Image 1 (cartoon, rainbow, N blue to C red):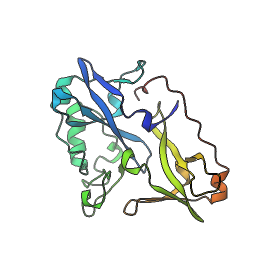
Image 2: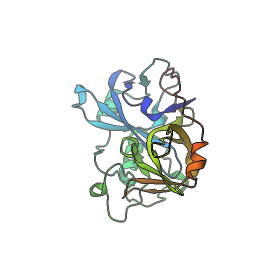
Image 3: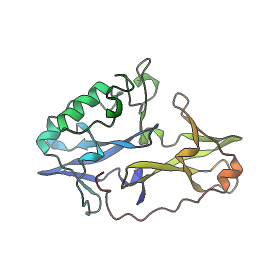
Length: 229
């Protein structure tokens, strides 16, 4: 089922032994277009600490609207490796996180592929590390980025569409405010040719005329949080 990332933000999360907080953000990989982490903002029991939760932790049958159930305990979350989500996250930190939860690393086709540089780029330049290999992006940070066609600016990103069975990002929902009779259209990720993070711009391989012919965005009707991988 297709849904927007925005529909996941604000959903409650329940461990096997109780509620642990709410989803505050989503990190996705801008090379593979996979959702890598849900950013969990814990409640008072953990002083509002933020924790990264991989989709692999989701339990099947998340049928309750607005609630994620995860195959973790509060104690596991409490003792997860400390990660400051306001700063880039290194591959070494990811290795520690996956080791703590006994998750299989998504990078294991080449365990240290990409080195141990920074892989999360959800913040402006001040949050980056020099020479870092940046792949993961904060959906909240990228929302609002200007979108350009081959012949000029089209509008801006207002949503991301994902497949809630595979956790793949399918496309961007673009508000074509820079085109006459602007509307919200869906642009597949295959049309993205460049993402300039330093300038907060996204470039497509389509013209304004192409975009005008794109599928109009039709907000989906949600039945609850997505299921596990």
